[in-house]
Length: 343
Ligand code: CP
Image (cartoon, rainbow, N blue to C red; front, side, top):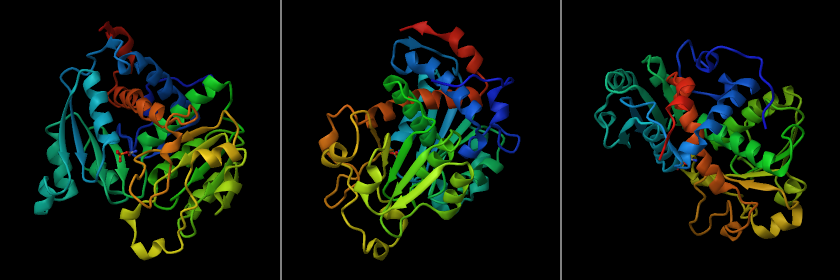
């Protein structure tokens, strides 16, 4: 599943951000370090599956600061910390934090540093989590900064792809990855394309409505790594022969409704189009949430019982990957194996 590694020394020193143990961007990873994190995530699987118990983070407190809507990221980071024996304190939304009274990011971060041992932060502005991180020396994880990045999501996505490919006897090098939907504002695809670019000879097909294309700098960066990048507005053309389909929701909360003019409902990933364009071992992913409101069209529920749909295996993988992130940032990954107890 993973390449051999010649690296040594604590992983947290190799993914450190400005000398601190913080995870703000996937740019902090190499292929070796990301796979090292995944080996730790593999060790976490028995805990995530409730077959073993560990109290390796007993006494530690996580501050979960979410200033934007979230279900998966907030709860799975919290659950991951609790399953390693720690406790979690939450604040959700601006309304119920003192930011509603004008408190700055700097003050909030400094205050929280005195209360908790690590923070996961989601905030609607790009670059804001890095601002929190600069104000503190405790571990900070970017849980999504506006249209910027969502590194833990991309890590669990890549972990899922490698796990699914291992099950299917396929290699990621040389694979065809189709990214579909809102590639302009969707932060998960921004992080994911950078992580995938660490592999070799990938073919990317980027399928989006006009006006919601992948930012130019990411296209250039991916091309420089020697990957093939094609862009299209045709779902049928783009999905042909894909090994991975990664669908995304249109991030309507991030732009004016007028920008949606010209957006057609032709971007829905559903059973009919998968059957027509892809082989039996394609994997269909989505960071979730998928939009189930009328008129939304990102990923059909008609794939719910299709084994090619990997979305719930993907969400399950959020727990071991986020446990691995905490273990590394808090420097306890070497203690996990010795801390395992039967349920
Ligand atoms: N994938 C994801 O970030 O989901 P939430 O917005 O529910 O956290």
